[in-house]
Each structure stands twice: as structure tokens, then as C-alpha cells.
Image (tube, rainbow, N blue to C red; front, side, top):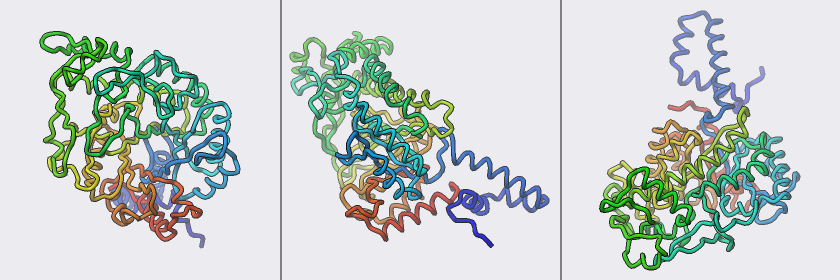
Length: 485
């Protein structure tokens, strides 16, 4: 007698029904076997449809690997040919559900290579989620950024200067509506539309407002080094203050806020001193996040304005463009926000009274200081999944971050995802054991699991651990075969 492979979808659903559904067991006792069989068959069809297609309905244990770069030539860690892609995706087939797909640039020859590589992934049954990683700086591929679309930052003395990206080019202003509309239209025609049918989703990879300074885990990101001080942003801020009646000492606010009076002299008439910038400069292990001082008055309004503008003008618009192009595509899964735990979670939104700054790594929770309002992003109708990215070890209070991400995501009615498998420069299992990682995964029950880097899964990687990989694959298979508790 032939046996059904244990990775077969029908087999997994049958086991799930047998283990979890008391309703079907009851029906089986009450009704004739043929009626029970029909009920089971219809249930199977419904569950299969939910598991295999549809925006916002990913199956439990949907595994995304980070990431596959594509470029016009095979360098900088990227691939460019069908042969390379066939080898890569052939090796990954069956080991994951999808990969994050990252075009390194957007010239015509880069886009041709992207379509070739994406076609190979589709032939091997590996789904692709397009990545926004460094997209802001890569928009240079659609034409040099004009001065009116360039972001600005503030120096320590209060002077406002044009911002440059890591390559010395003008930094694109993600808060400028006209800038985003114009370049998004070019991006849509050159990339999103030609890739229709080859992509299954869009991943916002650590998207926050660009920050023009070095940072430390326990030190706040200083507001003046955010790229938020262009003339266009000032106009938007004035409009926001009028609409929301933001006043100081009875006067409507009409200038950028600064926290020290002496900074005003260098602000070119665009800045004003306001009290209430109470965000702590540094935090120390053991401090409860709920007890940290918060921005007040005009500063609270400034943080909320930036987060609202960033979510609406960048996250929502880019996601909407992908959704519109892929309307009617049954294989389109939607948009995923992938947030680093300390950059994306605002300490102001933490509810757990016992959640403290950890001794290991001294993580902060600086979401609003980077323009990221996690609750707002999770509520966006354009976002379907929110993933909490973590950095090991688990003992660095990662469960507290995960729990807050999970609460916020699920309260918004979105699917929750988790990355515990981040192994930058060490082998799988080098920082946290697989048993510990999977225990946390089972506890928080994410729909999506992400893993970085993807090369750890390949036998030609110098840090490949065959026995650890067997454990990973076994745990993954067990997790995705079981119904949600």
C-alpha cells in the first residue's frame, strides 16, 4: 500500500484535524461515515484555499530567508544569471517558503537580471518578497535627486544643512509627498509592473526615518540628526499644527522645535526653542521602560507628526502601489513590515511594567525617536504582517520585545511574525540553542518565521552545520504541521 508523504498538504491538514478538531470527531460519531467524509472533504478544500493563497492569509510556519541580491553582474554578493539562480533556488527548494528579493540597483540591465532571477525562483517553487532595503538611497537609479526633493538634517549647533546618503549623493526626502509621488511613479513603471506575477509580497526591511549619525543601543537617537528638516517638511509641520491646534504660550507653532535656546541663532529663522524634550539621553540596565520620561507639549506633537507622515507618505504609498499592480493576482500575499526590535518599538507604547532595559546589549526601544509608530504602522490597511526582528541572545530580554510586538500586531488584526534565527557571523546555534529558539517560537506562535542569512542553509557555506540544519528543518516541519493552539 502506498503511503502519503508527510510533507504533503493534505496529510498535514488531516493530522491537524485529527489532533485539534473535537467538532469533526463529534460529527463523525453522530452522522453516517459518508456524511462525515463529505464534511471532511469540504473542510479540507476551505483550509487548503486559506493556506495557499490570498493577501493576509499566510499559513502557519511560513518561512522567509534573507536575502537574495540581484545586480547586472555577479558581484557584491548578488547574482545575475539564470544558471546561478537555478543552482541557488534548486538548493533552497523545500527548505523554506520564500526569500527576500533585493535588487541592488534599478538601471535597465539590473531590472533585466531581476526578471531572469525571479523567473528561476518561480520555476523552483520558491516565492519572492521584494525588499525595500536601502531603497531610499537606490532611488538614484531613477534620476538624480533634485534640491527640492532632498532631505535636510540639523547640526548640533542648530544649523540646517542638506543631507547626503552613504555614497555622498543627495538623500531622498521620504516625508515629501511630491517627491515620493514622482519617484514612486517611476519605480512602479520600471520595476513593480514588469515584475507582476514574479513577486508574492513586499517587505519593508527596517524602514525608519533616515538617521545621519552613529548610534548606540542605550543612547537615544538625537532628533536633530533625523532627516526631517527640509522646507517642504516645515510647510507640512505648519499645516499639522494649524489642523491640530498645536500652540505654545497661546501662539500657533510655526517653526521646527529645538531643545536649547542657543540653537535658534543658527536656525535661519526656521527654528524655535520649546521646553518638554524629556526623552532620556541614555538608559541603564534595570530601568523599567514604562517609567522613562517622555516628550511633552510641542515635542510630543512633533514626534506624532513625523510618525504619521512617515507611515502615510512612505510605508502606505509604496505598499499601495504594489497592491494596486497585483490586484487580482491570487498569488499576491501582501505587505510585511519587518522591524528591528529596538528601532521599531516605541518605549512609549510598552505596557509591561516588568519590562526593563537588559544588561546584555542594553537595548533601548527608540521607535518614535526614529519616526516609527509601531501601532500606527500595524493599523495601516496596506500592511498585512508585522515581523519582530531580534538580535541574540534571547536572555537580552528578547521575550519582552517579542511580547509587545505580538500584542500590538494582533490588536491591529494583522498576522505576527518573528525572527529569532539571526546568525550574522556565526554558525546556526552559535548564540542560542535551537531548542531554546523553537521554544520561544512555539510560545508566541508567529505565522511568519524569518531567518538570516540565507547562506547558512547552503552546504557550501563556511559556517554550514549539517546536524544543526537537520534540527532546524525538523523543528520547522513540526511547527508548520500543527494547527495554532
